[in-house]
Image (cartoon, rainbow, N blue to C red; front, side, top):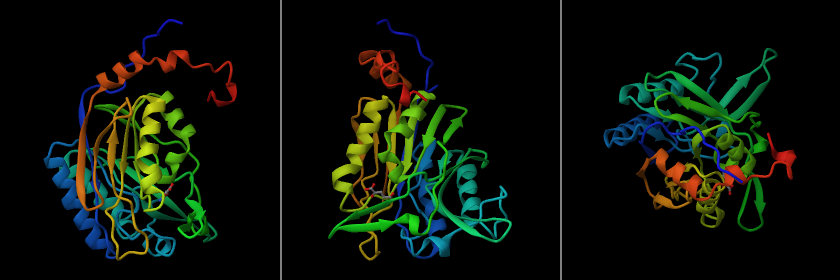
Length: 298
Ligand SMILES: NC(=O)CCC(=O)C(=O)O
């Protein structure tokens, strides 16, 4: 089986930073603090900066409605979404692409019925909204004696794979936390030419040690592209204890950098040559047998 030539996925090297943010109950204070940390990441040379899942609130079903913001029509007035405007300013002021973690979103239909989503916004260096991802797979699990969580008690799922074009660099996919457990979504994004899979997330202290890094490495290994996972810092006074351990994995599934549990920024240089090298050495794309498994060929 011969090898085919493939397009360059990452046009030039870029530094990506994950801000493992400490957030409390005060949304306005969280936004100011996030802006400080994003500036710190940008000052260190990062041009793609990632914030965690639910970066401006505590994480938990009880908090989603009270912290939710209205994002549509876009751009929403600042009174309906202070986070939208804060994120846009962070991106513009620092001349970066900002994967704005996620926030709870409120959508109200014409009859006044309310729907909540867990939503990630990505902004350009000019502060323009590039993409919106509503978490597709809701975090509903029950591990007796350890953790029960049911996002679906409050949230509704999104229904789209989100691929964002960052014109200077190439494409990335954005998905949220539990979405990483579904390799189909990652594979579709990789097949559509993404150079990185970016997951704002908030794993917990039960599943985090078992699966967080493993999932990151698995998605990188399967797809031979970069993976970034960005968690909130752990807060033992909160009801939900985030795992932390934000990390970046390379296309050979090596962990380039990994945080501990406290507030910090981790960053890594992404290089398109590394993708090409991994794919040349192990040419999965040319060896795939969709004739044998056509039902996963989308
Ligand atoms: N916020 C989440 O989706 C948590 C996912 C998680 O902890 C897992 O084990 O999966």
